[in-house]
Image 1 (cartoon, one colour):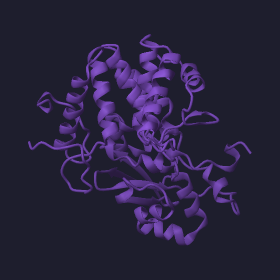
Image 2 (cartoon, each protein chain N blue to C red):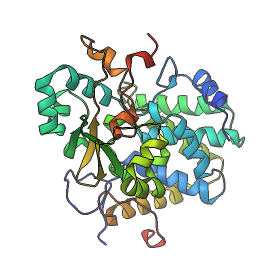
Image 3 (cartoon, rainbow over the protein chains, first blue to last red):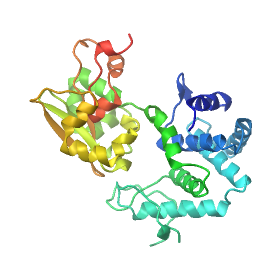
Image 4 (tube, rainbow over the protein chains, first blue to last red):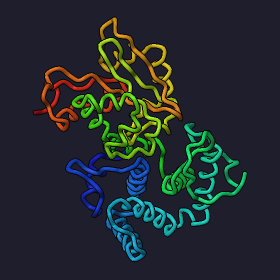
Length: 126
Length: 213
C-alpha cells in the first residue's frame, strides 16, 4: 500500500508538479494514473526520486528544445515520457513492445462500442 | 479490421471508442507492468482514488451555484445543460449530451452509471470507486431509498426517487436543492456547499452550518 505521505513527499521532491495548497491536482484521469504508476514503481525500488526528477527534467528539456510551449498543460505528457524512458532504460520492456501494446489498446478502443468499458483481448494484438 | 493511425476522428458516431494518445500510452504501460508483476492495478486504483476529488476542473459546483442564483441560467441549464455549461466556458468535450435533472421537494434524482467511460468527470470530478461497482448499480435501481439510507440521506416518504441510468448518449448532472439559510450568498460561497455526491444524487448539498466559516 502506498503511504499518502509518500505522495506528499514526491510532490515536494519533484519540481513542477501541478498542485495547490493541499497537494497534486490533475487535469485528466490519465494524469493521476501516470502519477500513481510512478509512485508504485518507486515503492518497488525501481528508482529513487532524485533519479526520477533527473529523468523527468531531461524529458522536459528535450520537449522545450522541440518547441513545447511549457504552459504546464503538457507536464504529465513529460511525466509519461519519463516513465517510458525509465522502464525501457532498465530493460523491463523494449520500445517495440510498448508500441505493440499501444496499438493493441487502440484496436480495442476501435472495436468497443462507444460508452462500453474498453478491455484488451488477445485478438487486439495483430 | 482496417489499419488505422492514431489520428482522432472528431465525430460522435455510435461505433467505436476513442482513447487519446496519452490514454493509450498509459494503458499500454500499465498492462505491461501488471503482466510483469511490477504494479498491482488495485494498488494503482487505490492511489488514484485518494485523488478522486482533485482530478478535472471540478467546476460542477460552480454550475450548480450559478443555477441557484440566476433563474435565467437555471432555465437554460434544465433546457440544454451541454449548451449552458459550454457557455460558462467550461470544457465540454464529454458534455455534449449532458442533461441536468432538478431535485425538488417532490422528486429526488439519482444517477447510476453503467458505463463508466461516459461519466462526465470534466464537470463532476472523478466518480467514487463504489459508484462503478455492479452491486451499487443494481441496488440503486431496485432499492434507491436503501442506497440513500446507506449514505445517511433520508427523504420525506412522499418524495419520489427517480433513478437515471447514464448511457453513452446521455450523462446526467443532478441540480440539488438549494439549502435554506443561504439567501444572498455569492456563487463562490454557494459552490462550497455543492459536493460531488450531491451532483450524482447520493447526497444533498451541505447546509450552511456544515462548512467551516
